Image (tube, rainbow, N blue to C red; front, side, top):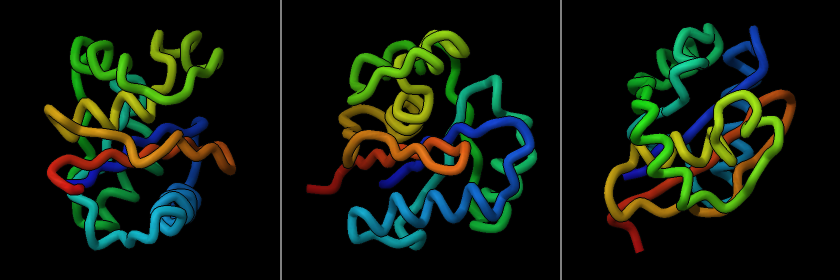
Length: 127
């Protein structure tokens, strides 16, 4: 299972979200075909660009609970002062990816930050 944790600045367009997602996937030799979910934090759950990106991909946009995000944040690879201030999480996108991917999930690498979008990829059950 693979999950992309995403965050973005307000009113970021879906095509920008998808372009950053593609860049993150390509960095690991992966494609969109392997994605099971997109995931974000509650404060971004109504962001049109994230919702539309999930619709274009034909996969759900998951929104883990605050408790799930806090627990997953300990497994993050990066810490951002901006993320801490906005969400209380060191990396909202990394925590969202891990929380939605489930037990024994791991990040493929640190989050990608590009064009106002953060993207982290988490996998479970893949060596």
